[in-house]
Amino acid sequence: MSEAAATVKAALIPYEELPGPKGIPVLGNATQIRLEAFHQQLEAWAREYGGKFRFRITNRHMLAITDPEAISSVLRRRPQQFLKTPRLVQVAKDMGFHGVFSANGDDWKRQRQLVMPGLDPAHLHAYLPALVTVTDRLRAKWRKAATQGTELDLQAELMRYTVDVTTGLAFGEDLNTMEQGDDVAIQRHLNYILPALFKRVLSPFDLEHWVPSREQKEHVSALKEAVRGFIERTRTLLRDRPELREKPQNLMQSMVATCDAGGGALSDDELSANALTMLLAGEDTTATTLAWMIWLLSQNRGALEAARDEVDRVVGRGAIAMNMDQLSQLDYVDACANESLRLKPVAPLIILQAAEDAEIDGVAVRAGTFVMCVMRPASVDAARFEQPQSFRPERWLHGEADAAHGRMFSAKRVVMPFGAGPRVCPGRYLALAEIKMVMAMLLANFSIDSVTAADGEPRERLTLVMQPEGLRMKLSAR
Ligand code: HEM
Image (tube, rainbow, N blue to C red; front, top):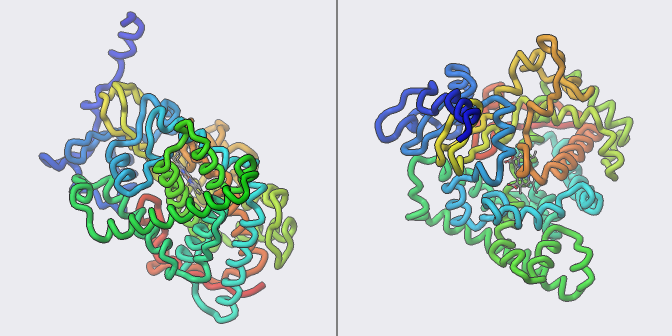
């Protein structure tokens, strides 16, 4: 080691010397954590112990960090220095979605290259007609509810929408869960999987791996069966229309064509796992962001009016957006999405593991230490944002955040709802297109009479994504 490197190493704080909540023997801090409020517990500890602290769940030693530069540095040191955790890999294998989301190292790199292209902005143009069809279907359903004066279960409505969009765009299948509701089996199985996955990833002991419940077996095998069906039908279509192999029209066609081309690019199991990954990664995240956004707009009528004015101007009253050009002109709606993700990030924690001894934010950690990137504290920090708890989309319109404490900075470097670095969310363009489509349809066609939760302010419930609890919406036609 050079003298300079030795000096830097000596200046690091050893992990063991960090502050943190006191735990108990064996279980550590496990008994202080309620899974549904895990992110809030970490945010509370950050207020008490500062932007980096340690805690433990059984033998898993955790470093929590909140500084955006430290988080960004960790996220960018992937895939080599920081990995998806062995528990996530195990659960993903058990549940049949061990694909690009959970893979590490070269496996991840190969799969990312195969999955990414189908989700890039260039492909979104081709998907737009399908997006319009599903959005139109949602409008028809909400029109009926408005006429009958029925209250809508906001989260459930939006989840059906995003399942229909993802299966339509990614797999070329029109499931129409929206009109059939929870009777569509796939919706029920998806509703089970994410909370079960989250529980298994964070529980002190993963008993389900050794003794899987009957419920888990049933849901997992039914979902795998559904995905096998998507793959089989795609294979048949590609046999009948071989030209699609060169010019695939959806993500599944592109993945199947690559897989069938051989050369070990993507095995059959990986194909099925990545198809399921898209469903799981694309559904709750987008639907939940929309649910928070509609709630926040309903509470901020000035912003709601400004968004509606923009939609009326760009899309037209009573219409729905028909092309990418219109979506790209919805700057204020885009700012509302950014502001919603700042206050209510649906992925408030990113959990990784150090593959080797590493330096994180001036702390020396050993290989195997878990790193909890706690995403929200910096986004609501008064030193960075003026009136940080207020919903003010305007702060996103000028490319820079408010000047606080005499300095300007880019809000996008602080607020990272889609992660950062080589594993940044590949579905972000699709997600934003869906969000703008739904918001434009809602604002152009309806007046939001009320959005309510049981206790006034909706409770945040973490089930892998951070959902608002029990939001109900009442609309009337404009
Ligand atoms: C508002 C909606 C969404 C949010 C907030 C979101 C957020 C995230 C976050 C935070 C990550 C981890 C990034 C990191 O580790 O740096 C991620 C990864 C991922 N997301 Fe999204 N996501 C959304 C929608 C989607 C959609 C619509 C899809 C696909 C249909 C998708 C597919 C994925 C995949 C495949 C990964 C794993 C990427 C990898 O590890 O290489 N996401 N997302």
